[in-house]
Length: 168
Image (tube, rainbow, N blue to C red; front, side, top):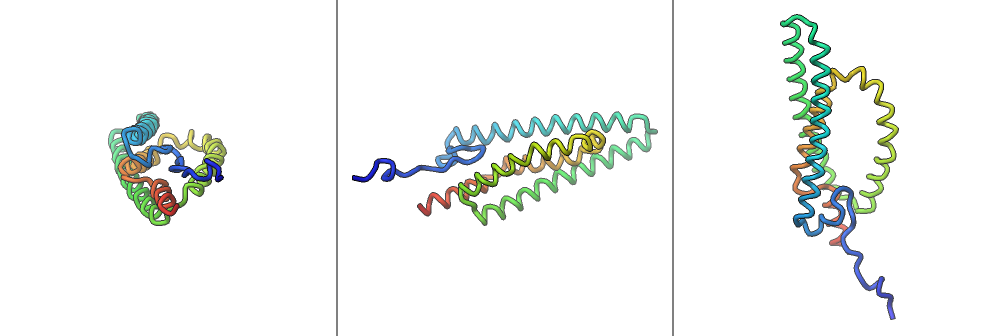
């Protein structure tokens, strides 16, 4: 007599951010995706605001002509960076969906990125303080990436998990 565990299917794989809700794509799935996107947009928007405030403080002592020139350059750089972030994320997501990694590989990649993140964050704190007034384009790029991520119909990890589930 076979064991009960071996005769039952394992079900859909648990993915980062969306868990197992990606399989049915019901209200819980869209709630998780929306909550993640909104929370990341709020954090990035707050950082963008802090950066703009620091920039205003730095250029506040300049004459009107120079200050307006700096504001214009900052606006052009931020707008360009937001568009670049959108386009680069969409291109990377399209390439990742074409490669469609298995759920196990997706989990390994996610875990390795989580292990690297604290060290990278620590290394970037001091330079970020000095560059804070000029970081608005960086946060604009991040906002572009986050909006592109929120607008995707299917995350690359979902495509890989769906393909792996269909192969079973």
